Image 1 (cartoon, rainbow, N blue to C red):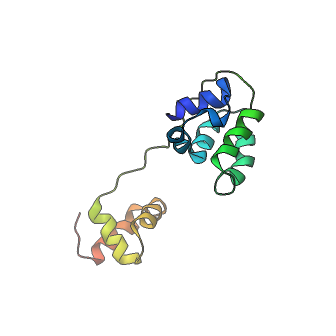
Image 2: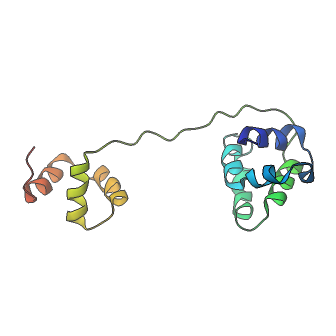
Image 3: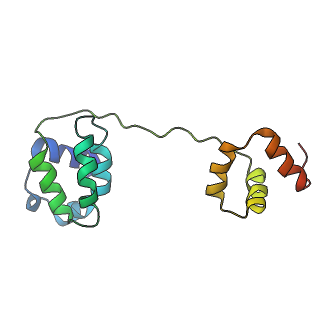
Length: 131
């Protein structure tokens, strides 16, 4: 089953957990279900509150049952909210900054956002890099 099938089962069909075969039950992911249900403005507070219990604490069967019982019945359209595109930086610049700050690439990507061009040029000059 796909995520869309599971969302429809939770919101529309509301079949009992035992009616699904074992491979379908293994395909149920509370994390992904939380993520998709949180795209609905009416469910966001409920999902936010419940997610601390749904991941790692409760079994997938309990998560399915809770959402099926608690959320109103009816088909809904939830537009998936994509993350904003991250700026792409030159790999050589990232590597130089990793050496300079002695930190990971993921942290360097955050640092770059706070640095101005003058600061970047100074670091590049220190490492003998031109334009």
